[in-house]
Length: 393
Image (cartoon, rainbow, N blue to C red; front, side, top):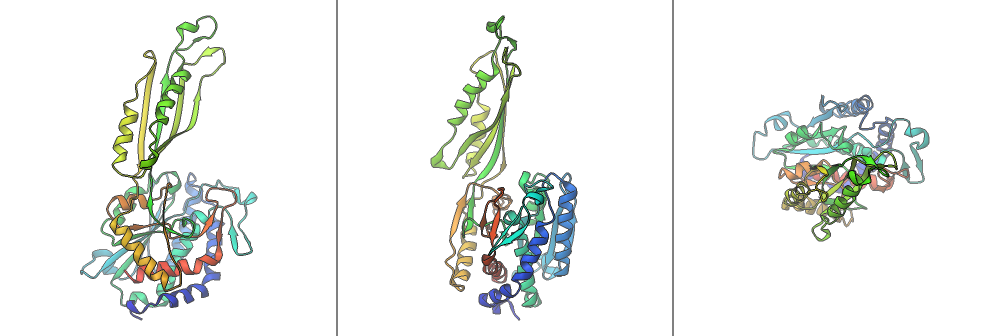
């Protein structure tokens, strides 16, 4: 069967036939607890996914990326295309996702993987082990349609194990694999039913205030209250938010002092930064670095950073979305797009100038919450659309 003869409805029919196996695969993935900070646990989940990729004919490599459990890459399609892209028709697509979750080992005892009606509940099912099962099933659909026989397209499945904690170990490899790709498809959860064409960039900040300790009764005037200074600085930081620009700054953690009868010598706060435009990264970092103590006898240490650049709605991403929407219409599906304040590894690939489409995974709710769940009936058409987009590249 040639590439151009892969009708979307046929792929949907195939996805419906494979649905029970897809759900069974998802359950197996969810039953392997894989918190980001447990390298042994995430490695076990990665090894399971590697085995499934090999069953589909993937050329699998497990990359070590301490302190994480590693990164899985699996190539599908003509080897010459994957390695050399040796003709103008040849293209390479990256399917991007992660295997780690926010849930600690033992969560399954209080939050079991269970099906209730047409919903599947459990830690990580929505964010984003359903997306991993969808990617593997989409590749199986292409295998069964004999897509690779005449294909000039190679696909690389890339799954990390530290996305939920910033992708510090995996970022370099993700960027390396994305460079030169025709498209990156990110199987993170959907925004409602929509694909994601824009995401905010993310960052963190910390302010430490060093004052001077003193007895609150005997030597009050000799003290320099670090908590008071921090409170004044937090008022300044709150003013950095510019809602119309999509730039927000918030305080999330705060601490300081030790005893109620001591003027505190140290106080600190940490918080979050979100930006919609790449140009705002330098602006907001500069604002933090210009902070000066109001009480001249206090010392400030200010440490802001942008961890993930924003995924802006680029022409390349819009082109991918328009193609997806056109294919979805063949399924009588009015696919929509959305922007979100959350970030993913798609932020990295988009910032490289690579066309990136995100939110292609499961429909559900409760990411990082005890009611995490997905809509099982949405799996077939969304899986079929992933396969159709690869075939239409």
